[in-house]
Length: 151
Image (tube, rainbow, N blue to C red; front, side, top):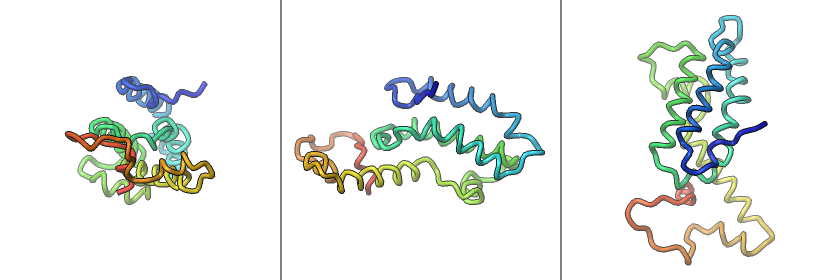
């Protein structure tokens, strides 16, 4: 049974606990000296990334604090996989492992998603690809929309 936990609104704490539970299950594999680094990264990409990447196109309206929770989890996982010291920066971990941060992944996924809208045969769906939708109210306060990821 697959659980796509980030699609349920208001269940952010459930999402983080589910990721931590999955990490605890795989901790022996991820911390083992007998498993190569490439294999550990493959395990991460197969078992952890699909849990938070499902529906990432809709994260443009999510608060930074919620996105940062997933980013912290990703950084902790990379630090555990590589056995990096505490003073190694998260930026250098991402560069060394050649994996983008969560915010950049969300942008690339949304750009692909938006490109599918532009090339769609249905004219109503094609109109959704525009940056400005006329029916939407002007931005008030600090509201964020998914299409903000295009900039």
